[in-house]
Length: 396
Image (cartoon, rainbow, N blue to C red; front, side, top):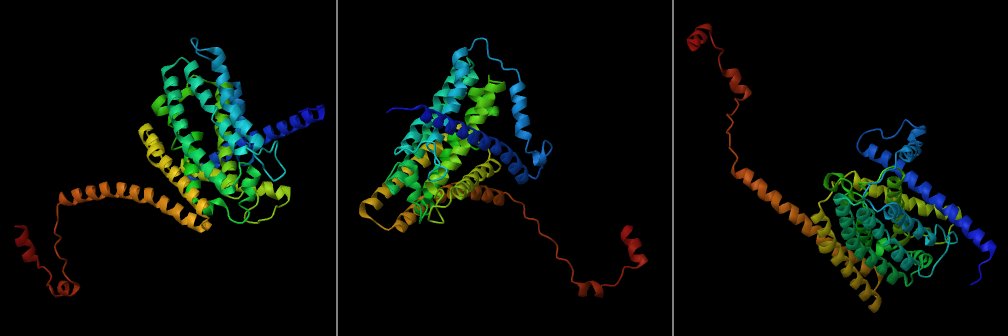
């Protein structure tokens, strides 16, 4: 394949524009999260730097860039400084094949879904190397926890991507969106979006799955020895990955830029529709952060191996049977909801039974106090008032 100078210039312009879009999206998420959580928790949020606090992310970036960038004396310097890049680069590279509209993409690939899976998993290497190169027991422990968590939750995410590929009959993002022109996949496999969102939260490291860098457990995880600009790269990669989760969920389950209108909209309207769906998913992620506490490491791994992975395999098999026997799509919806009802009922019973046992124990140990009946108003009127002699005799 011969690459001309014009092709290289065109690719460079596309990459530069894409980098600015991704960076602007990540910065907007920083501001949006703080404002949204402030509204949920009844506090103002950033509102001093710029109108509505819009310049607060820029002030935060200046503060981080001006901080002293130090490294432990016993660290592996080359790997220590390269690890943040290894975490951020996969988060940016996956955007090369994300279409923001039908004809607005840096490089549309027939194996776009496969490319995303292959590239996104490389960030695990950066997290492990960040912990190992720091030569700190807390950082190493955080790196091992990150590897265990991300490898575990990769399985249900990949399985849900396979389900979407089976339903659309393609690994191309554009073909996946075209397959949802009439019915989005959230109505066909609602369980798929639930599994994808929960596993995606763990992949990004958002609450309640932020255990591998939890300050109260491992003092900051694999990032504990980082400061200044290098820590800011990890911080930026987290928000870029959050943006990736929103865009990917909109493309795979919410119909991308086509549903509910069916036909292809003008390019600007298509981008606006896709971004609206992506930001909606991001707001759900922020809402979860403001609602649920952090899990313990054993609870986190239990959710993956006891619930998400079996449920994802069950949905995969059900989808295969539906395609094999060519059942109507609404049958797959019913089966998906039935599978989703199983963990909901089990978890409700698991939480209900201890609560009932505790209430029964409290009831058995309770002291019953009998209240004296209050006289009726008629009886109170018939009772003669106490005389002074009677009062004196009573006091005596």
